[in-house]
Image 1 (spheres, rainbow over the protein chains, first blue to last red):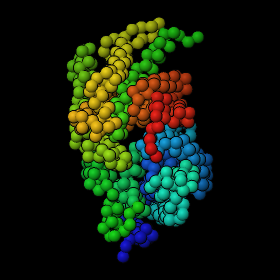
Image 2 (image 1 turned 90 degrees about the vertical axis):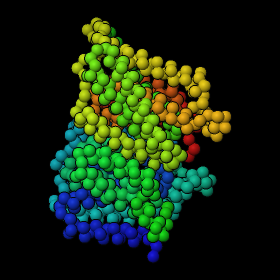
Image 3 (image 1 turned 90 degrees about the horizontal axis):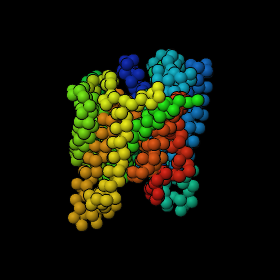
Length: 305
Length: 294
C-alpha cells in the first residue's frame, strides 16, 4: 500500500495520543514542544515546499503569536480563547504587511527580507519594555487546564485541526495554484493566476499556522522571551522542515519532533550541545537532502511533491 | 545649543561604526556576488576576528600589538574561510538555497561553541584602547577610531582597484559571469572562488578585530552582525561595493543618531529605512539591473 498524507497524519497523531501514558511529565512536555515546533514547520512548508518561497523569518509569526497570548493573558487579563483570537489577528496583520513588502522579491532576496523583518519585531520586543518586558520577557503566563498532560491534549487537538485545515487547502484547487507558482511562476502568470496575490495568501496562511503554534507555546512554557523572535529560531524552523522532508506533508512535523529530541540529547551529552547540534544538522543536510521522512516515503513508494 | 565637541565625537562614532559595518557587509556581498553563496557564518567569522584581536592584545601589550592583531585576525580568518570553502561549501555550489543557508547556519552553531570552548562564555573587553585620544572641547576622540576609519577607507579603495584595475579582479569577475568562457581562456575558476572566499572572510576577520576592543567580543556577536549586513546589502544593492558603503553609512548613522535621540527605535529604524528603500527602489540604491529571475 502506498503511503497517503491523511493516513500518515492519523498514524502519527494516534501514537502521540497514547504517548503521555508511557512518557513521564518531562518527556510529555518535550513532546508538546515538539508538536508545536512541528506544526510551525508544516506552516512554514506551505510557503516553502508548496509555493516555492524560502522564508527565513518565520520566528516573527511564532514569536508574535507567543507574545500576543502572553500580553493578552498577563497584561490585559483576557481569557485564553480571547487571547488566541487576538493573536491570530495580530499575526495576520503582520503577515499581510511584511508579505506585501517582502514579496517584491523572490528566492534569496525574499529570504533576507523576511529575516530582516523578523529582526525588526525582535528589536521592538527588546525595546518596548512596558509591553514586552524587554530582554527578560513576560513571566507567569497561566496555562489553560493547568496540568501539563491536559494541556498536552489541547495542543495535540489544536495542532491536528491546523494540520487538517492546511492539508485540505493544499489538496484544493488553491493548493494546486500554489504548486503551479512553485513549479513555474511565469507559466502560472500566463495561465491567468494572480501570482502575487496568491503568494501573499500562501504567506499569510503559512504565517497564521506558525502563529497558532507559537500562541500555544507561551502557556506551555508559562513565559515568553525575545529568543522566540530571534532569527536563529527562523533558521531552526527551516531546518526542521528540511530535516523531516519538505516534499511530504507530514515531513516537517516529524522534523519538529526530531529537532527537539536531537537538541535534548545533545544537551544531555555535552556542555557544547550547539556544536553537537550543528555537526548533526550539517551532516544530515549533506547526506539526506530529501529529509528523513522524504527518504522513507520514497522507499515505501509514496509520491514526493 | 548643542556642543560642537559632542557633534564631532558622535560623527566619529558614527563613521567608526559604519566602517566596521562596511567591512563585514562588503565581504558578504563580495562572496555572494561571485560564488552565489550567502554565507550566514560570515558573522561568526567577524566574531572570531574580535576574539583573535583580544588574544593578541592581551598577550602583547603596546600599540604595535593592535596592528598585529588586525593582520593576524585577517590572515587566520582567511585560512578558516579557505577551509570552509574547500571542505564544505564547494559541495553545495549550485544546490538549492535552503541547503546552502542551512549548512552555513550549522557552521554558526559549531563556530559559536568553538569560540566558547577556546575563550569561555564571558564577554571579553579591553580596559583601554591603544594610541590614546584627541580632545575636542570637553569630548575625547580615540585615535583608534580614526585608524579604524582609515582601514575601512583603504579597504574600499583596495576593493575598487582590485576589481577595476587588475587582471586578478577581471578573472574573478569573469569566473562569476561566464565560467565556461573563463575556463576556456585558461582561468582556474575554482581558484578564483577560493581567492574570493578568502578575501571576503579576511574582511570579516579584520572588521571583527577592529570592532572587538570597542564593542567587546562575545559568543553570538556574529548573529547580530550578519542581519545588519543583510539590511545594508538590501539598502545598498546586492553585489555592489559602493552600495555596501552607502548602506553601511546609512545604518551606522541611523543607529548612532537614534542612540542619542530616541534609543527605543535605535535598531528598529534600520529595518524601517530598509523597507522604505525597498518600496521606492526594489533593487537597492546601487543595484542597477534586474536582480533576479523569479
